[in-house]
Image (tube, rainbow, N blue to C red; front, side, top):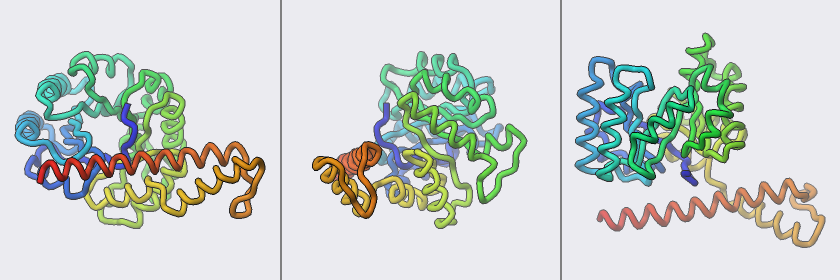
Amino acid sequence: MIARLRSLLFVPGGRPDLLPKVGRARPDAVVVDLEDAVAPDAKDTARAAAVDALTAGRPDAGTVLLRVNPPGTPWHEADVAAAAGAGASGAIDGVVLPKYERADQLAAVWAALPSGARVVVGLETARGVADARPLLAQRPDAAYFGAEDYAADIGGRRTAAGTEVLYARSAVCLAAHLAGVLALDQAVVAVRDADAFRADAGQGRDIGYRGKICLHPVQVAIAHEVFTPSEAEVEHARAVLAAAEQGVGVVDGEMVDAVHVTMARRVLAAADDTAADDTAAGERACGSA
């Protein structure tokens, strides 16, 4: 399982020239996308170019994944085979499986990849969302909710408010929590609207998501800001635990009980994970200097 993934930065599979640059944004994970970002008549060319580029040099990120085309498409098996080869050479850590709808789809991908490869699944269709609990009970490494594809599949219309996908967005997060799977929130396609991304990420964190899909490097820093506890949150969490040790207490005018203690511990755990990630990122940077 992946313990910490605040940002999942997607890079078009047909633009391998972008891979050396993505490390500047310091994403937690990079996804080279062979699905939505590549036109049907360019799939084979993009696959070969992406694998060659990844083999020549991994992007600077803790996790590097290849998003394959969905099961049932003409390119899926070739994508998975290419990912298996790239994984065996250490060029990537695993794959992103989009439009996950049946447990056997995940099993087949796992069987084709090297041992220990990571698989992040996308729940982004009506069937995938409806069957989220049994699908995530198979314990993929992480799962994301794809709002755009879900709305298109069910016949809805995307709005700025997002109420049309709130049920599905919440259902995926709940299913991930019950399965112990890290949940990643929906994309914001207005890639240069920082305020919209920050607000949407905040809503996702409030629902219970642990990170977010990023479609542009500028979104990465915002995702890290939103999904990393602030200094004020950390101090409040410490105060809650200190009060709890004395029995029933009050912090900032609120009674401290078991619920607040649980939430405080989660805040501190998230802060510790972030500190560990930052240390690892610094070590990688020093090693590549």
